[in-house]
Length: 453
Ligand SMILES: Cc1cc2nc3c(=O)[nH]c(=O)nc-3n(C[C@H](O)[C@H](O)[C@H](O)COP(=O)(O)OP(=O)(O)OC[C@H]3O[C@@H](n4cnc5c(N)ncnc54)[C@H](O)[C@@H]3O)c2cc1C
Image (cartoon, rainbow, N blue to C red; front, side, top):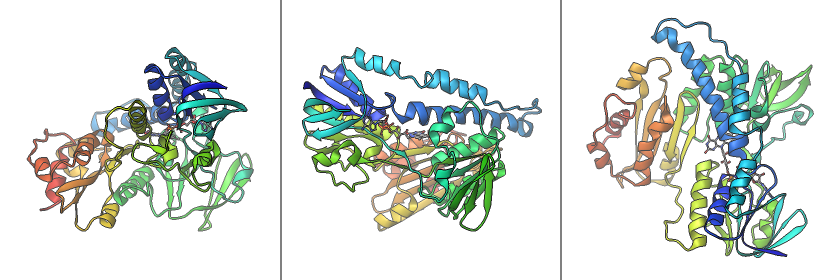
């Protein structure tokens, strides 16, 4: 059996960072990936979807010219530049040789195949066994959940993987799931002229975020021509000529050329053999401590840990694992200031707790909300200025525990609030700051005033 210091199974952003860094630091690292080295984010997730969003936003901005700056020639959307950019610039036509070469160049050994933990000191890849002396890292991510809707398996449905690899958009689209992925794709397709119906079973879009965000976004999407159904799920799906017919629980029938399933993502810890090191066979995530350890000698990073399905969480956890393995000092994992951004226009950036979560966990909560249109820059911005800044404070501690910024560049404005929540900056300090005029982030000052106290 060939022997390695480290084996990394699953080379998404988290596993890749661990594997590259430890190889660079001179450890003998085995990297195992069954699909593309780099995982979901660069090939089917963040990067291609954000290229689509960028293109769709450009169309929207062009269409806003008449309200702000005169006339513009006809805006004719074309998907080819987007598809070409994703194929050539983002994914190298879904080829990972650059990432593989980078790892091998650092001294790593790459094996393409499906890996499995045999024991704390042994992994197996498609029948070949490897001994591991210092540690096994699991970064196997998550996959799109396909809900058990009768008839869904009789149609040729898409997930994000098909959506980002198509050379052309469908003539019409129904999207199941009003989370971040569903909402981003709905706006992209609509801005490219596709009639879109978005179906969300929960009472509002972006159900995990502040209710104001989902409600505002539903209004924006409807104004752009998206048909939004909230509080009603799909009860069956049938083929309909060359397209699909989706029957909703309230009897509505939605017809479209294509159906896209965006109803969440799920990981499978037992499939990678975590049961061999004591993880319960029914576990939905790999249970990790604040050093991302599953058990002595086994770590997990990324979506599989269930701590937040974001590339920045995977990278953050990877940093913790690297330090732990190398015996370097560093703070334990803390998720109290977990930021997340939904890249719609307006974007929704959020950090820490929502108001509802804070009220469950804390005895005294204060909330301050400033509509973006009431701030100077929001008012100047005019068309496309829907949104708000919402702050959630722990009154007793005198600190922010959560914040949401919905608006143009909402994810960027969030930065200041992420620092405040992360570092538990006292409200008195935040109130004594100077906020540049007339920025969007100056709205934070007004929202602080509305917190009271
Ligand atoms: C459409 C879309 C848009 C997104 N946009 C954003 C965004 O804007 N910002 C953001 O932060 N996040 C975004 N995400 C989420 C982000 O892509 C994930 O959180 C991130 O990729 C998780 O990284 P990971 O390290 O867990 O590994 P993943 O990227 O999930 O990769 C895991 C890898 O493990 C491999 N694997 C699994 N099992 C095995 C096995 N047994 N043996 C070998 N290999 C195996 C898989 O093939 C895969 O390549 C988006 C996701 C999607 C789908």
